[in-house]
Length: 198
Image (cartoon, rainbow, N blue to C red; front, side):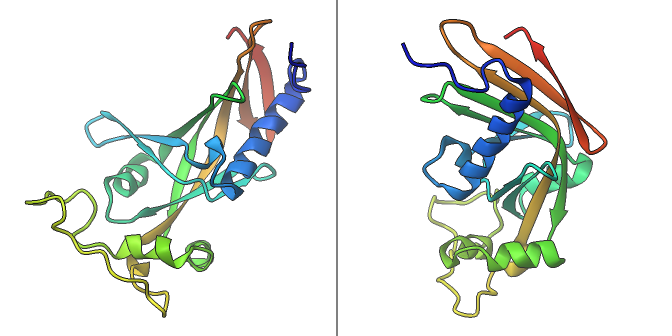
């Protein structure tokens, strides 16, 4: 039988493991935490869900970063209310993490400039697509995706860095000897956690 993880009965260790896994996901494209699902709410209150690529996770500030096209439904929905949630599940690690918080969009500031500069050219071209994301097409290929831009500017006007300031973390670890679930809420700059029934 496998040994239980060190965070199994350690509340602070469980939260630290969640942030460690998020940071790992931001840096490792093979990690399950690299592509969480993002939930938003549209203008009439319907839930919307899609996959994003996690680009940064900072436990100290409690922020996560991903990118989007400022012309997209995702950007509009985040701009309307700012509330958002991320969900990720690692089947092999038997760990689910849900993050709820407030999102802020950055498109013409130092945060966006740094995120753009750190993006690969193959990622940048996605923001130069015409027409804008979500536009109805007559055929599946009736859009234009530009080639890579040596100047690294094509598509920059459509690029947004999104910072999600976590306000609530919900972690669930699955084990046949007994699951462990904990919920953490931000109180100012500190976190308060409690074990909850799985």
